[in-house]
Length: 511
Ligand code: NAD
Image (tube, rainbow, N blue to C red; front, side, top):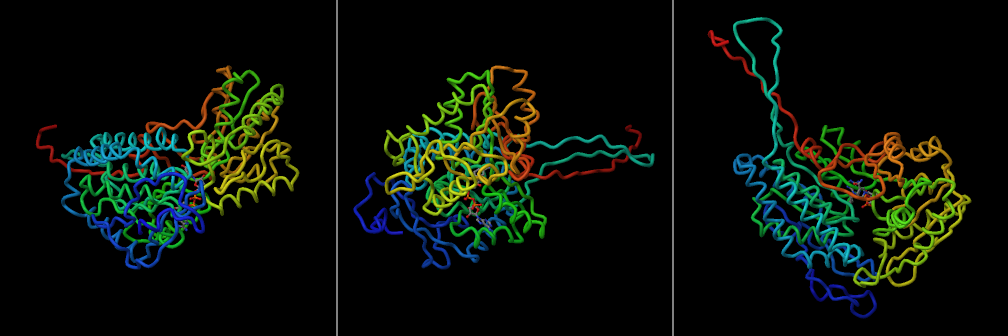
């Protein structure tokens, strides 16, 4: 990529915000930044706040996938990697954490430019989550443990059996990530893979590969062994599929849409690859009549409008108990109408753009379908102004469970509001979608809060808050929202497999 080509407008002046330092744009394969085998295949990457081209990225090919997987496999099999002390794998992650910390502002700006996420959010949330994630998994590397197992021989004999289990790394991991939390998601694949002794090939979303490419440079600087981490950029259906089908890949750690996840699961069946799928959602924010509305109303609005609704756990269905329906609607719509849309770099901006023109068209088409089916837009319901891919914060009322807007993930700043009457109605409505990722319940009544939480079919339920993730809490989806979990002890289980070792010891009078 050439600096002169960076951030040129297709037909206009230079970008309004200063450019952060851009990475060299080369894939990381086998411990080197390398030219792909077809260096002529380039794709524009666009600033969603302005619609301008930032730079061009390499679209790697299937042969590059093979190079990266072979390198990861060589490293995994190497004596150096197999015998590396767990504490030293942890130190690699710690060194990377220090480098990310050192380059925190640069990475936060790069992420804001590439994804349209607000700079104050990438600084405070994305980079903090990335650094915390590296440190969290660095600590895990030396805490992997098996078990001693009591053994009962079938036939009595003058011998004893002793058995234990080990947790062994699964092997080469393919990490495939979406565009809504680019650097954070990259680390959610790389850090546990390294901590638990695997090696990894990361394929970030093509829309937002810049921070992953910069991470690749920092990984080199941190001194990771060649092939331990490989990063390739390109089209999902082409190189993502090739990764999923590669015989040397043993696990796929995927975050993205349910449709892609379903295809990956079907393909992985051929080779019995281990799969974790973190997929889409249609999560309810449930406001009960006794809730503290001063917290619940802004909380429900943030649940859907944060990151322009592009959060898998976004509170995209708002279930409001009848006595407070009008008051909550008034409050949430008021916030929606007054949010300031704008560039990721403008400190006054409260909501940024969607990721791409294509995605904005998709969001608009889904809202149009809802309106055609009888919903009404009480706030928003159309694209916002400006060169970027803005869509107005939207509140839909008059919706029913049969409508597509209530069943399908929109992944934009669009919430469907529904009046609910009693506990049975709340549980029925909350569970009435094919997804089961998350939910929030807003109430002062602890009995109702805990008992309702038990009835909601979701991987995470928040009480009086929404979208709070923690690396120590298992994260995953029920139903079409996914398979398996990330974070905490669950990550250890999904990047390792138990191996049972059984031995026969001659008793010789010792027992
Ligand atoms: P996507 O499924 O289109 O793409 C995700 C990744 O998969 C990208 O890297 C893409 O290039 C790659 N890909 C595309 N087709 C592929 C194929 N056939 N084989 C292998 N890889 C392929 O999703 P997206 O539009 O980038 O992201 C938005 C989706 O991600 C939403 O549905 C959102 O809910 C979901 N998401 C889920 C979580 C979670 O943790 N549950 C978190 C963030 C986003």
